[in-house]
Image (cartoon, rainbow, N blue to C red; front, side):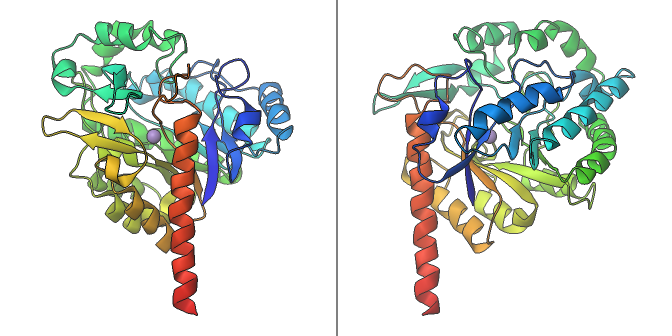
Length: 357
Ligand SMILES: [Mn+2]
């Protein structure tokens, strides 16, 4: 596995590149032009500037997360054509600085959803929390207000996206799950040939949480959905971002089994743990298997058995030791998460070596 760390860019992250440099085994930063709204072209000049910054510390820019898909593409509006062309132009430009994987998602309106960004765990650290009954009875506008209160802009919750929220909800009244699949297929048919030409793997991120919120359609949320998704194309560019935390919020998803089945199509692995409660709530925890509901040890074992050589990042982390950071994206717990993942990986390596002797 090739270890990476998400970095929001200069002046946009509480974590600096020289700090990331001191975490063992990190080869690259997972990056994006966070100031560019969905639908706009990422210019060559801008991506070269990120490259210049990463080069100073010897990090690769192999993984982009995310080039966001404009809402009109997800809705299948006639205006989507222009946004799809812009998307292709961005793909060609990120390829110029070495991008090999582009993560994206196809979630209507909202990316991830949580009800609390600073819920306290038993150990005194704080984490992201999803309270199901609260979301079921909440007005989307209240959720937006709460999620955007932080001093950091949250990915997927950019102001320009939220400005048109009521219109988006109205538009989605006409888009059911089958229509969303069709719109996704159209997007893929357009994008995959360009990705192939540029030697980029398009890696879709599953829905977070893996069920419908506010009656919006959600389609990438289970083993069955992943099977359907992968059957859309045989292109080598047609891949997955397999997020254990997103899929893991539904305990019916057997994640090690999903990895064992689809490992050759996983371009990017997000690894983190969640603890799921009987009432449907879930809370993010440390990476350790014992602390949550996802067997992270078996997740890493499944990747190891598959000889996985794709990219990995610790996904979210707890906020520790009073750090002031973007919720879920502090330095310390993600660094601890990486060391847990390396510990497991190295132990499985050693085990194999011993078995061969
Ligand atoms: Mn993820």
